[in-house]
Amino acid sequence: MLRPSGSDADFRQALKQDLAAWNPAWGDRAAWEKEISWSLTADIDRLLEPIQALYSATRGRPAFDPAQLLRAIGLLTVRETASLVDGFKEIRQIPWLARLCGWIRPEDLPAIGTVYAFLRRLYPEKTRRMGAWRLPSGRRRLHLKTGQKMPPRHPGAVARVARRVAREAQRPSRLPSPSDCWDELLARTTVES
Image: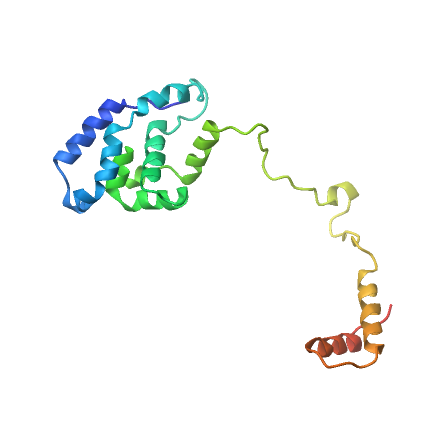
């Protein structure tokens, strides 16, 4: 379900008003020329028509305005930002950049997960992922009682390691290596089973 949003013409009008009353806290206006010119010329309304069909009109929580998300992604492309995460950190830290995207305050930005969900709407996968695939631990399958331990997965593994260590301890001596001390310690502490 989409929240009602203003048109691109309304956004441009508000942007022109912001430019007329430039706030010196936003920095030097000449440094923002590339972003300002893109924001004034980008036609986001034309892109929104196909996106409207990707949202349900009656179900779900109202979505964030896709025009703002498209402006943010476009501005990050214009600014040549390396990643979405870094770009949204910039937008949160720079109030003028948030205004160029359509948010009044940087606090109004959605979480980065919202942006990735929006991109999944634009570029859906052929087979949808259903979360992390995890194998069950086996406790339910074995019908173990409370406090009962699971059987070992690899029975006899400790005995095999102990036999290998004992065999290595009986080999003829060679040049000392750092692992010799470790092997000797293991040979003394392991018990043949």
